[in-house]
Amino acid sequence: MNGAHHVSHDHFVQFYRADEPLLNRNVASFFWDALLRGDGLLVIATPERRESLSNHLTHLGADVALAQREGQLAMLDAQSSLLRFMVDGVPVWEAFEQAILDALQLAIPRTPQGGVCAYGEMVGVLWEAGETEAAIQLEEYWNKLLRRGGIRLFCGYPIDVFAKDFRRDRIDDVLSAHTHVLPTGPNGDLSDVLNRAIEEFLGSRAGELRQAMKAHASCCGLSLPEAERAILWLRSNLPDDAEQILASAREHYEASHVA
Image (cartoon, rainbow, N blue to C red; front, side, top):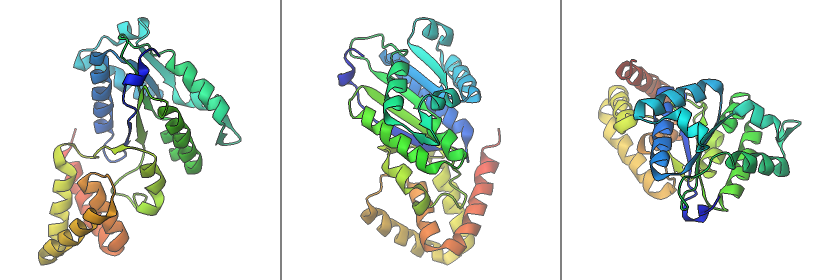
């Protein structure tokens, strides 16, 4: 990858189960920007995701078929890619390195300064299958490659921010493996519905709760969107109330995002 060292090696993650259409739009925008820069594009995803991303990129103005023919865009299957380096349910570094380096060679930048932007869904496939330790190991392997420079990686996890699985002890390793967490809701929508649910459930106590969450935000050091950070705080500090608050927030969110 000539000139790849000029490109950032950010590592993004989005928890998409509560709003999968938003994930598709965000990944498409990530790739559209990369196309305009002249970067190579690599997609390692399920067939459904690959089709959705192709449709979104076309809608944005990209000629997906041309980008593939010219070698700027490569699309690979997540499950088939996993088979290249998983042994007895565990990723093997040497095989992973070879498989990903081979894949990266298929995504050719159009400028000397270009790098590769990748969307990887293999970790999501593992997570959904209950292979959470393998998913985290795979993230560590990705980070080992990212430190070489020239790659920006976007990961998607089938985790629902409204559900019980979205709590610190469950996702801390996922958070630690990434440099940026993208919001579940666009334009502050998740914060809006969460605040509405808190007001409905706690009434006059809502202000006191927000102060406690704000104090936590200033000392915890987590680089998280406001709403996701607030949900984790609720799960840790008010687990009983959190169930009702988040159930209400989900209803408001889904009602405001009817397709």
